[in-house]
Amino acid sequence: FFNDTATTEIYTEQIVGSVRCVQETGTWGECLVLNPNEPHAYLEGDCVESQANSNNVIRAGLTPKFKDKDTLLSSLTYEMKDPSVIKPILLTQDDQDEFSVQLYKPYYWEFQVIVIKVQESKQTSPFKISYPQVGIIISGEGKSYWKNSNKQSKGELNLKKGVTFFIGADVEHYFEAGNKGIEIYICTSHSLQ
Image (cartoon, rainbow, N blue to C red; front, side, top):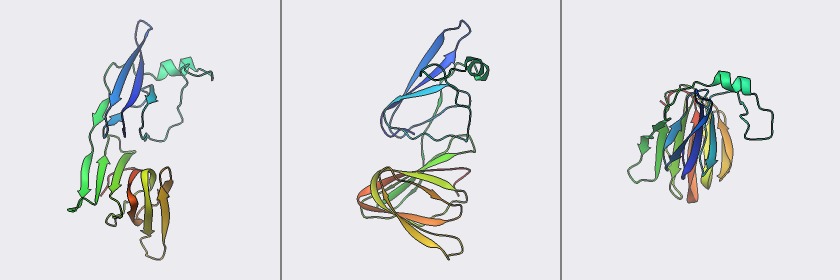
């Protein structure tokens, strides 16, 4: 999910034994979707990476750490194709343009990313998602307010750039921006309802 110009390189072993390097330069607002077992390297720029749970990091020789060549070669798909690029789906934008909610929904059920932008001193409508969520503040500052489904527990969290947070399933919450606005990326699984 590119915030600024970012570059990803995808390495694919070819039959002749050479390594082909495909460079994909993203533009702001695009999402690059890579299939499992696709070696890649992030080179420069700002991006948010979201992925399914995995314990299969395989070193390919770009660092002085152990290089597991046999595992690397056995895990490659050997397909020569460009990665999928998806655009966001606008879910909500209020009439006064005070906030917007966009959904980046790849074809994998394990994850999706929600981008929330709130204008200065404004707030979102309350919402809840049926699955746990992990978020990060990309820019700005503000507050998050929540209450659980039985309405017995509620709270607030001060937010600023770099803060990460967890929101449990079925917890109603909303975001309020400070005097600079706020941009929030939230990763969750399944469909946003």
